[in-house]
Length: 287
Ligand code: GUN
Image 1 (cartoon, rainbow, N blue to C red):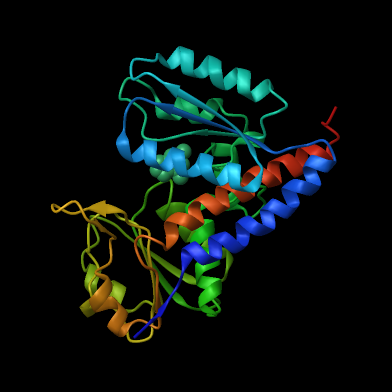
Image 2: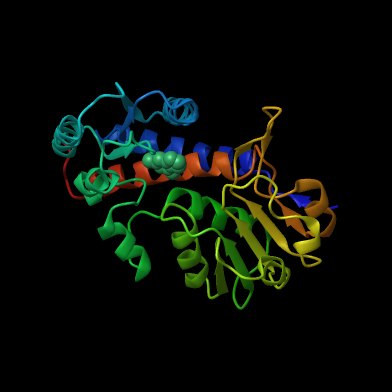
């Protein structure tokens, strides 16, 4: 049976550390601040936003929530972001995605000041990640790297297969693995032989949004299997992109869903917010 990589436990350790840093920053007059914007009534988004607010409260990060109605115009949203960009109490701005169809997601991401872009979605931050010179790492991929570190395996020279090529996870994930000197393959919906490619992997990161797509037959004996997926099955239970039972029989280490990558994403968001506040503090932006 594989080692279970406990994201909840590791996230707690990281949050405890951030709490101590937050106390130190607060003593210097710079309490980290996060603004979270949610537009409309997406129930999954509501759950994520609540978890983010809870994590802020736990650590001592000041948070503001803007829950805007579904019919909010793009202009109104951009004006709010502009106000938050100028607000020195706010170190991080997060606009929960997806946005309603009438709002241009790209325009919204571009409007966030790169220095407050704690999701690391702004093109400036994406470019910085590409060249390995960054302030903020994207939260989910950074959480995955921490979990892989926890498994004790060294990524250098390893065959890593990422399934999924989203801007939020798949693409930045591949880049972070590359920075660790792994050999990286990205699979997607047009990949000709997914099973054969995944079978080569020492490390599998599944981030495709299809319940239990990756099964034990596709896993090399001794692989590390990281499941970024969070899907609802017909009976309303949660399932990852990985079929846990069959993969756990072959893997050296595996993440559960829930309790694997999810809590790590939130811990990494908190880490970016504290880092942003810390950078603001060293710039002397404290009154
Ligand atoms: N929607 C799903 N994941 C994320 C995330 O990491 N950040 C934001 N802003 N929206 C999301």
